[in-house]
Length: 341
Image 1 (cartoon, rainbow, N blue to C red):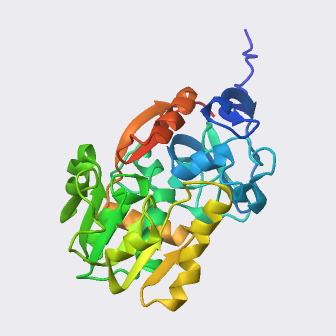
Image 2: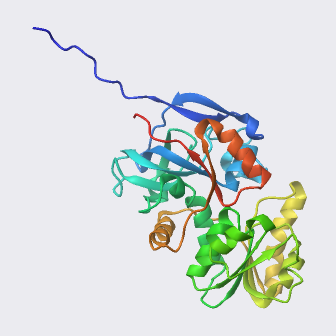
Image 3: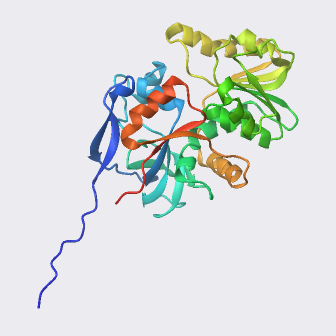
């Protein structure tokens, strides 16, 4: 008689991840095998199937603007060496205080260290994955989708019948903003380049504006709400396209650094109390409630994530370079795929 003495398989304690040890361009990113992260009582460990890339990911990689470092992201190097926020995947482990999720749930949300096989997400920034979409589609929704939702609904106070202009309509936030504004009953015009006008139209825009051929700031149309995701025109220029009591929501962290950037960030806020137009700048506040709102829009067929391209985990530096070049139509995603625990 023989005895089976085979040892049961050992649960993995390490994972593959993209790591950065310093701020810089995409060249600072490299693949490494590191320890799987531990979770706190109110956190969830997610087996990553896909991770989205937002413009904010690029800023966190470069450490620019410098104000971000002062705000707690790390003065001389990233506080979290594994980048990535947008995540979709399967729950592997839950903390002792977690009540809404259990192992095996398919989820999407905003966490830390998404460019890896496993990521940690707070239960307050996680929701069940919308039915009928892939992990890749779910992964590109959280940051950009919540940003667009809060810009239009909370800061812009968008309403049915309003005329809305979305600048940067083919980008990550813009593709969500066009669809959400239509869902709120607005009449939407999207501003984009020639090669991306078809995309903006396919999202439901009533009109499109090719900025390479015409200047929307000197056109005759005036808008109740303008969402500017680019900010490559002067404040006075953009205000010309706004109705006398319209609202301008500014959503861009790009542009010059130092005092020039600070002046650009602060000037609308200083001017707003002295003009009839509402000039608003904001930081989005990721939360579970708004992820649930996005989920409802997706499942109702009113919102569809737009994916420009997909990259394997080890190709993350190339994905960031693609974002930096500004050629993306919609979102870029990192496909991590299924793997053993």
